[in-house]
Image 1 (spheres, rainbow, N blue to C red):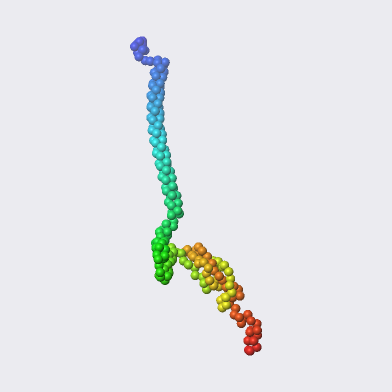
Image 2: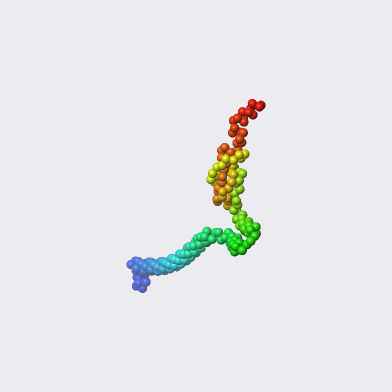
Length: 218
């Protein structure tokens, strides 16, 4: 049986099949490469957007940090100035309270030359003095009362000693200069005269003859 020439031509040989397969493979590879390049391009675009976003956030944080640092520096400067002013003008309130007393003293000095009544002058000065003590007392400044009390180094400064009968030794006899306390702190010790160690002994205690006669009578 004879084969038809058309049938032979319609059937591809092995080499033609391999060529067609290569073409298909190349086409598939080309498509994959196209997809891969497109995917890598999208990834690069996404990464670029993320980097730009992060850089923007970093810049914002830097600006915020600089603002906060500037605000803190201003706050620190204001606080230091307030503290310095507080120390510098700490006595302002007290001085304002003293000024009326100064005014009273000035008025007294103006009228003292023409005053004829000494008792009136004394009374006026006494009023000013009491007013000054009241201002000091309101601020927590008080006198240290010492006369008749035992000598105490925490409150007193002894200038000299003096013998005194019927007074126990180391007793404050007199004040040379008043001492003062500010609240619970001594701001000036009282300068005092103190009885010595021999004080308090009577003449009979120091006279042996009197003592012996008293013993014989018994």
